[in-house]
Each structure stands twice: as structure tokens, then as C-alpha cells.
Length: 452
View 1 (tube, helix red, strand yellow):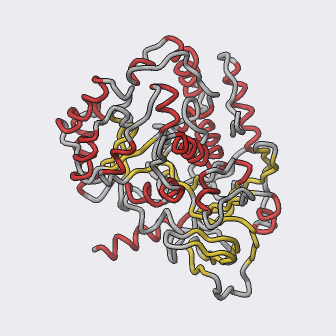
View 2 (cartoon, rainbow, N blue to C red):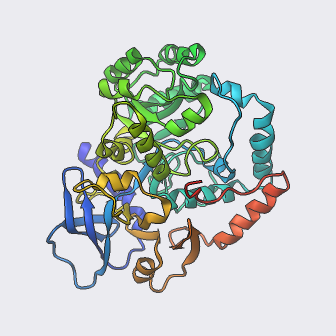
View 3 (spheres, rainbow, N blue to C red):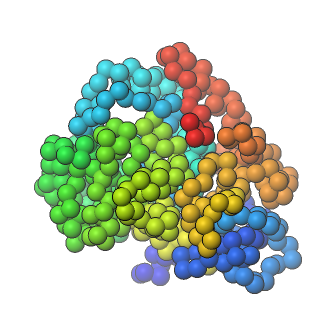
């Protein structure tokens, strides 16, 4: 049964790359879970990593790209709200006790809720999701959750783990993403528990508020009351969780998703990450959403690295931080045998970053945790080049139409060839969204803040 399960996931994960015509060989500094391989090569064929190392055989028909960069697994985002990422940064003038407080403020309704509803009513929800997926990929993401409630949007860019036709409705694991777990109906709760019993995953927002919020902290007891302290569950935010809560989570096999930037901007503090680490709770890092979090996982890594350096005694190594964006989130959704690392037979979801001259010796993880969006040289999803610098994209896709983007002053190229249905140019999608938002006194958020 285990072998059948692994084969199902392996086949599903490679569906993204059925169009790959030639093997691809990328050379650069390979960052694997166990070692760093300078001047290494990674060979990609049929959407999978066929081989990697300092000296490997390269087929004669392979397209070889010497990246001169750092080659790492693509980033995995387990906490986002994609259709809201069209909005520019929201800077509240106060800190809140819980998420229910800011959601009840008139300013939130004016700036966010009403315009978002208007976009949905105008049939632009799929445009908003497409824009958000492009934003995510420019941040080095290859897998994400947080799609809109509609199931009619044209998937085919990043892996939508919570609603991905490539994984198939009958293929495990089933990943359920729920923002308001205490409002789940009994049938929805039963379905979630059934998914967990079948080795699925449930990602839920719990204890989101100020660190000393009694009402937010009480949600942990409510969680236990609903019988959801179960293996496969991961708690998102958890700012008000106590050290003893993390101990219970570890005992129950419950994971944690940390979003420090959004926590600090809304609540003035973030989760007790020291308690999560001390208790051995598997922890992922994710951006939440663009309005109060980061534009993507790459930005959240940079923010978390800065937060870590600001502590009296840093809690995390650069290696640990990067694991929170790759191996750990893959483990939380039971895909760590297929995603989140550079390893033979894993899905070829690849991120290539430009190295920094200021990078400490023998520590490529520092580069990964301090990169900016313009540092992204190349992103492959299921072996398909989807985004990157003009030269490698044109070499890998010499006959494909490539669209141009400017990210933080750097020219980039994007391929939408993996989308299952023809789509309008991305510039048209962005223009349509911006026009609609301007009718409500807003404007379309940039794809990247570029350090502002």
C-alpha cells in the first residue's frame, strides 16, 4: 500500500511536466538537505530530478545551462489568501487584540472587503488569482495554498496544493485549508477528520491575535473541544499560544505555520517560536498575504532572518530558516517524499538564485534567506521553466512566446505554456484588475515591493 501511495503522488507531481521535450541540466551550487555541492549539476527529465552531483552523465540531447547561481528546491507556501494579494500594503494605525477586531473595523471594509467583493461580482476572481500566482512565482514559490473558493479558475502555474487538478480528486493526500475552523459545519468537520484519517492534512488559523490576548489563546482549548488536536493538523499564526500548548502539539503530531511579518504589523508581536523549537514542533514559514505580510515566501524569509538577527540571542540558523520554507512545509502536508528538497526522483521544482558577494563562506543558506526578488534567476515547476532571467529562459524555451516583466528594476521573462487553456497576455490581466480597482479608489499592488 505504501509503495502504491508513493507511486500515485510521484505520477501526480510529474503531470506538470508532460510537455518537457528535452532533458535539462543546470550547473551551479547545489543545496541539498545533507550537503552543499559547489560546481554541481542537476539533471531534470520528465519533470523529475534524474540525477545530481559533482560528476554526472548528461544525455547528448540535454539543454545545459550554467547558472553560476545557487540551485535550491522551490519554496512552498502553506499560508496565503491569493485573491487578496492584488491589494497594496495596508498599514493600520493601531495594533489589534485579535483578528476579529481588525476585521470589524470600517476602514478594513472600505479598503479591502468592498473592493474585493466587487472584483468577485465582476467575474475577476480568476484574474486576481492569476496575478497572485505570478507574484508568488517571482518570489521563488513553486507550491502554495490559499486559492479562492471558485473551482473554475484556470490552474497551471504554481502547484495549488489545496485544489490542484494535477494531484487529482482521488489521489492522496487531501489538503484542507480552513480560515475559520470554529465555524466549520458538522459535515465539513467530519470530512476534515476523514481526510486526516486518510493521511491528509488540515491547515487552520488558530490563536491569531496579540501575544497576551486571552480570547485568542482560548482558541486552543476550543480546538481540543472540536477534537482537532490530531496528526496532520497544522496551526497557522498561533501568536497567543503558550509553551505548554506547543508541548501538546508535539505530542499530538500537530504542526505549526509561522507568519512573523503579518503578526507584528497587526498585533505588535509574533508567535513564541522559541517554544515551538524547544518542543520540536515541525514549523513552516509563510507570508500570509501581501497587505500586511510579505509578497511571497522569499520576502518572508528575509523578514524572518532580520527578526532573528534582532533577537538578543538568535534562535535560528540560516539553514533552519530555509528548511521552514522547503522541507518542513512539505512534511506538514505529507509530500516530503516528493517536494521540498533536491533529491533523485523528486519533482523538479527548482529555484535558482544569484549569489551575493557578501555571503559568508560555506553558508549558501545565508544567501537564500537574504535574497531579493531581482535575485531570482530561474524557477522551474515540474521541470518546466516558467520564470527567470532572459538568457536562461530563452535558451530553455527557444521557440516559446515569453512575456516580459520588470521586477525591482531587473528584466525577467515568464512562460505561460503550462497553463492548460490559452490565456490573455499577463499585462492585459493586470490592466483589467487595475481598472476595476480604480473604480473603488484602490490600485493594483506591485508584484514586488523592492525593499520599500
